Amino acid sequence: MFKLLLIEDDTTLFHEIKDRLAQWSYDVYGINDFSTVLQEFTAIKPDLVIIDIQLPKFDGFHWCRMIRAHSNIPIIFLSSRDHPTDMVMSMQLGADDYIQKPFHFDVLIAKVQAILRRVYNYSTNTIELKTWCGATVDYERNTVINDKGAIELTKNELYILKLLIEQKNKIVTREELINGLWDDKRFISDNTLTVNVNRLRKSLDELDLGRFIETKVGQGYMAVEEANAYD
Image 1 (tube, one colour):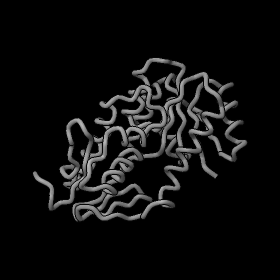
Image 2 (tube, one colour):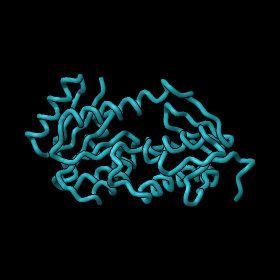
Image 3 (cartoon, one colour):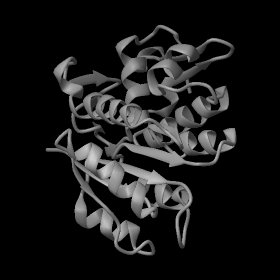
């Protein structure tokens, strides 16, 4: 049974969502104190977080940053606000999806199921380990390891890296990456993808691997082997 953390201060909506998700055998937890969200998240250890943007004390963006500093767990934002910048901000912070209120419960459930399937069944359709530029990429554990150390990637970072190294020395278009990363692409800009790729490079720089992700201007990105890379 998957554990979901629902960070929603509207009590009525919280119980409606909880009851609907419970029908699909999800174990749903709430927050007791909205000033200690990170502590409760750490104690619960959920498999997925659903978080409202407008919350007491600090907004959902703040808690997304805090969670992302500690975990690559999938995150879905809920919001009654309809400004495109909210969606862009959520994606740039590493959220997996954004749902605007009011929403149909079937849509929420479908998105939860799709994300859980994509994240936690990752190894069912792929080789679990991949070797690239002398490093081992573990798709199941979201890690990259070489003789310089080990790093843990977020879900988005791992997806981008996986797509690039599975087609190494070939250009993967920006459109292909965006289509794979986000189900709702209405407000996703090229800049949002650029931010995610730059975060991946920054993570890989800890292992001296960031330079092997090349930008192909006007086209997309390409992962190269060490022998083909340049400083």
